[in-house]
Amino acid sequence: MPRHIAIIMDGNGRWARSRHLPRVLGHRAGARAVRLVVEECARLGIEVLSLYAFSAENWARPAAEVEALFKLLVRFIQDETPRMNAHGIRFMVSGDDTRLRPEVRRAVAAGVSATAANTGMVLNLCVNYGARQEILRAVNGLLAAGARAVDEASFAARLYSASLPDPDLLIRTSGEQRLSNFMLWQAAYTELYFSPKLWPDFTPADLRRAIAEYGRRHRRFGGLQDA
Image 1 (cartoon, helix red, strand yellow):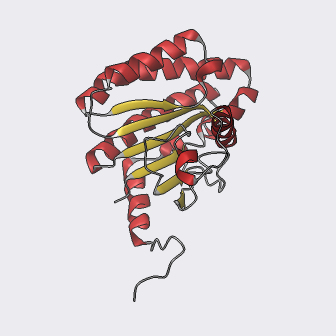
Image 2: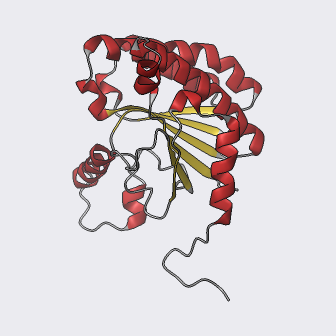
């Protein structure tokens, strides 16, 4: 069983377009899929679930869609905080919050505070997140601290995910097969799983299939498989 699962939730827009619906309805359908997958991961005993919710590049989308996405995020946090507490889930957010509107930052802070004492699964929502930006942030932080030499541990301690294990399994939906600037440092030895399903159609059964495939793989981390 993987300790940490990361998911690139791709395909909301295509799901809506295939049904001749506005893109925002695809995002709403995607939020329902999030709820089911979060609850299934908690039930299975996954320690960390990281979800790529809004990338640093997503600001290039139409302003109305971006606005709708953040309204949906605020609503999701408000609606799901009681469920997270019921399941013992601790909520955290990874990403640069300086560009987020005050009401979004307040909602994030409220969700983090309300679940801080929970000891179950960590739900790590990646918002305004980009892996290259995260790496540069870590480098600049080390330079500002006067570092003259850096090892993996000191570098990793500057990442948003410093308190988390690296992902064991990374799932991407919609059939696309790329990382899209997500957890580039952390995913150095992560098993990749690509699902053809659009994110709103991704179910707990699909999650279990991905985990079963992970369980069939041999992780050697550059070494040799035991005889």
